[in-house]
Image (cartoon, rainbow, N blue to C red; front, top):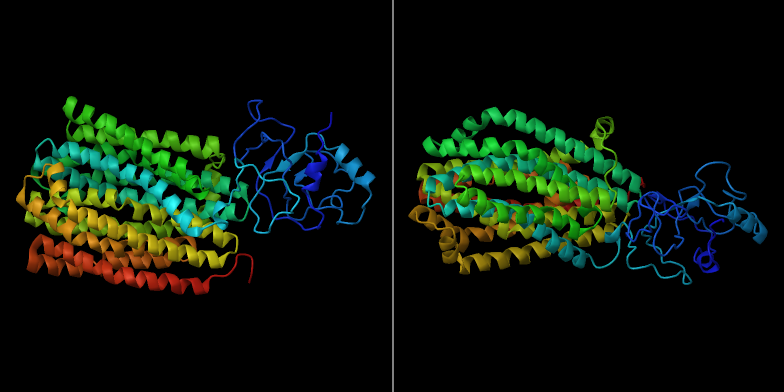
Length: 575
């Protein structure tokens, strides 16, 4: 028996003759999913139908319906039904429409997409479970910023919690040398992490733009190609970095037993960069579609695995630094499995993995990922320089710097998360041509960053003695450095955060070179001279103060540049 829409469904099509926006995904109301069941998922994959069986509005660009707006389906094969493609009003005969509909057996139907235009008054309400793909083009922008950042920060802080938990257990071994070794190793690992963040930015930018423009197939293709590139890049980094591990640690100031333990730590953890990058790419795809919850699950799962396994490997099995590295590898594997389930199985936003397709997409991906990687590499370079500056003050100073690095990553995780999630918000609104909402999103992100950083600074200042006790800091130099950071230097993260948001806007709005220049400017001109002078005259604390002063200068400049760049934006598709 032929599948036909009801009168209520036909009424929902409207009679204005307006050609609807280009849809993204093709699916079949005649098919009932891959497993023969009705799907309740908000984004039905190919071959699935919604539980309500509702016929959705929307049509392919250039297609029109039968005397009323196109209803968004087409034959799988064979000749087109009578009246298909006719302009509205060309054949208003009800019989012609009935004849056309009567042959629509096994027809494909397009997935609903967000539309800025108000729906017809007679259209039935959309089920809550079937939300539009481009969710950031409507609603309160500050709410999107807060919700996405809150859930994203939980996930990102979970990533950093893996390192924090590792260091916490290592510190409770009572060995300052082991703590310093992990600190040196973290400075090297952050190089690979920064590369992954750059590629992840391209995932959020490209997929969100495609979804904002209602081109779901393009988003799926980008999701697969970016994942392939993430694997290739991290494999290359591991091959190059592995034989250079002792040399890299020596350049940072590691010697003797510290160098030996740091080398062991990196030899185990560096090859797992492929897993870390894959998990981050999948998380970026989930953020692009607006699924903050599952993006959070990706990284939260890794933190849970680390919390369970760290005491087993580090303390109970007595593996120490080696155990910490093994747990890092396992936790990264967990993030990949959870990310794949969300991005591919749930949202179907990762197409077939293909080297050929990945190479074909090199230009758009690297146009964003290349400058973003260069921009993000500036941060580990600056951190490495700070480690080298503090090394002459002893292992205690390096151990204190390692604790500070974990505190920054964990406590200011909301800022790191915001710099990642604001990209899809900007990208979807830019792809939809909503430049007014792009500017509002940038302003709200700056406001959120400032408030968040001030609150965290206040908490750290009030709890600095507790932090020293929690990490079992017995070295006086390490304790003094941590206290100075919590009381004073942490305030500079207001301006670090402002620059992060500015760079996110550059990367997602087509100005990636600006992000590269601003990041490297802060890492060099904003770090090296200030830290050098501060260390010379005021010791280790002076080096931290100098780095913070440079952040203030470049943070203010980044805000000005970000607003300035909005003047150069044009609505996509317009001259």
